[in-house]
Length: 358
Image 1 (cartoon, rainbow, N blue to C red):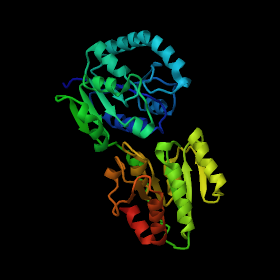
Image 2: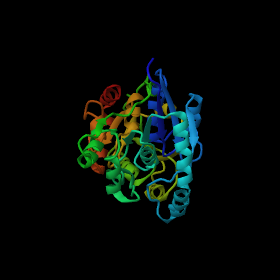
Image 3: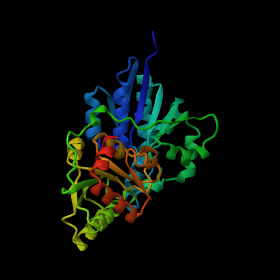
Image 4: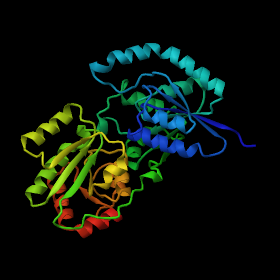
């Protein structure tokens, strides 16, 4: 009889529509189908959609309010201090669970948590770290203790999974030989296969482009807005639909630009959406304007919804889009070139359809 494997997954967040969480949930959903594997999930934030989803699958979940490593200015300092003070009690409780349930492997999802790593040291169990972000380059994350502290912890782990070659290029030079390292692209469920039956090939029709994700500077919504503004001045008829929660200073900056330049008939803030297949069905083009995308689920999901994808030629977006075959690439941050690509697809609907299907 084969040995029962028990894996403890450490989450940083519990909302299903978060890219890092969704990708981990998709992996867990496949793992639990295997005989001889039991999965446990620890989550440090209040119970949300990802935990509800996992519990319906029969996954054992544990809520413990651990601290996160990313600094959040003065706003988050007291929350961090309180959780840090509580952490000895939380580690004791989690260690008891690990011992009682006979856990074999501890697995941390993202670099903004280290409680899985510390637990592995306390229990002498192997620790795997799944790195899903550059950190400062993509999300503006500044880690408590700095990157050197992170590299030290990575070098004391059993293995590291990178979600793209771009991520591997950043971290691997700091990792000693003997540590297992592997690039594994994110798993995306078949549920995201969302083929179109009709394409917007009538040249008289306007096109709908969408940019999906948290409205923050690293995602480049303002670049997309300015590019659509320019494309329309060049004779195209394109609507830009921004999908993401309407909060934060960067949202205000983008919204003010739209108001000040009288673009409300061209740019629409659609808010946060959960039924993404339905949302994408109504769109023609997907824009990925991120300056440094670690992987880019929105790129793959857009392709699976038969959108013609246009992406900034940087980081992992360059790995996912083959230029002029499965989408179009433009120079990162170049508003003029992005506008040109939009005009090109507006004028050449045959190419639009070809890229969408590829």
